[in-house]
Amino acid sequence: MSKHRVSRRQFLSYTLTGVGGFMAAGMLMPMVRFAIDPVLKAEAGGDFIATPLKIKDITAEPQRVDFTFEQKDAWYTSEVTNTAWVYKDEQDNIVALSPVCKHLGCTVGWASSEDHPDQFFCPCHFGRYTKDGTNVKGTPPLAPLDVYPIQEKDGLLYLGKAEPRTKEA
Amino acid sequence: MKWVSKDIETYLSAKEYVDTAVIPLYSVSFGNEMKQSASSAEFITLLTNYLERQFTGRLMLVPPYTYLKSDQYEDIMNGLKKWEEKIEKNEFKHIFYITSEIEWKNVEDELKGSLIWLPSLPLEYLNESQKMSMIESQVKQLLTLFTQKWHENL
Image (cartoon, rainbow over all chains, first blue to last red; front, side, top):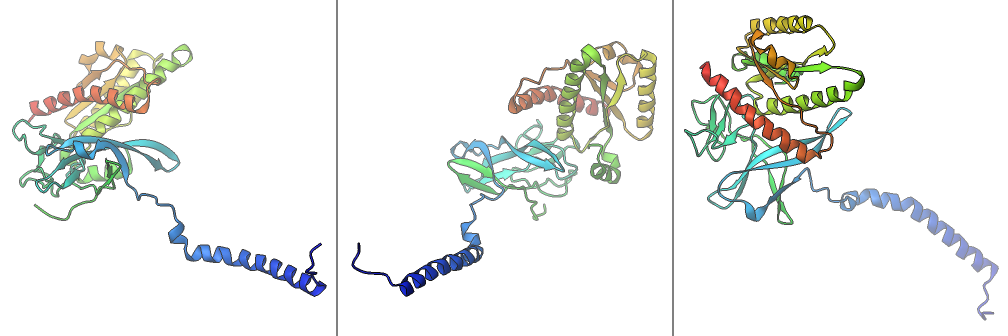
């Protein structure tokens, strides 16, 4: 037996403090969690989607990259594949262009017209874009190609949602 | 453009640029041939959708002309001719039919539009990316066919 004897008064106060502490903690914990919630949030990597293209394989010549993600259309989930034209510009910046023609939405190809080997070409109405995506004057498109925001992760290229550019030709 | 209200709206505001209609032809049969019927319809659906994606701005993907395989040939043909007439009247210069039914090949001349026949590929055992590349390679060949046709009538 311990020499230090616990009196009834002490015993009660210990128990009360213990139980009270639990209750206080139970009330405070959720509050604290709410307060610091943004810190606890798992990093969701934004809406960036991985592509199979390695950063080091990107050259000055635009190349086609397909990337797949899940899309929800009402209650119908489907796998959607998007395409990007990716290359490095003179300043060594990676550029990822959307292949969707700004005219009526056909798919443009790089150098797919024999007459214009260094331009993006739309087969539908012969729209053309220069390498940086700027629409060529006199062809149907009225705006430059959309640009994908890019990210690098583990040596792979990640692409976000294509954004329109405001710069006019 | 697809047969959805949003695309039709675009179409109505840019009519002069969309001069091609694509009509998939589906045959429906029941009983023993049910599976074959479904798998070729699946193939044609995937293919025409991908084609539409490439040429969104110039072609209209019309809902498929669907008929019972057991029906009389004359009835099927007359039905399609009515479609053809309607579509022609609505300023579509080029009409393409896409099917995997070999029977259409024999009656190709009766139609004004161009008939594209493709043997149906069994896609059920392929995974998504294999399916994609298969459809893609098929469509690639069709693309030149379309651009040629467009060039003829420039």
